[in-house]
Length: 186
Image (cartoon, rainbow, N blue to C red):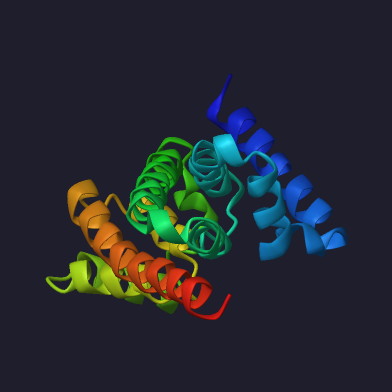
């Protein structure tokens, strides 16, 4: 299969999923995810990991999964933290390498001021901290930095270490915060 065919199939899957979720928005609700995982309680942590990996392919945010993991397993917070980090590492790495492999560079307007600014920031001596901040702030889509870093061929180790440090900080606050709320108030 050619890169163009693979890319077209992948984009079709994303668009189909986005359309489905647009018309069924309640399915991404944290309570629905919580119900799904608790329904398969004995496999819950494995399902959580698989959902983290799958969400990267479909470009959905990791935050609902992180929150649900913290809420469902407040007594296993460290395990949820490790599963979340492994899932984020795998899905972010897949996006990084797929963006290069599928030539997503042509999707970006390389002459735009925004692209040039982001490229300069990521390539600068402060690029590590820029990626770290991008990964730590939950309102900014982390998968976007994965695509950009992959298309710009930013050093994988610089990218993944900054991303994982930012994700670690975010996950610790989210998981232990949600676990605290469950244990304290429910």
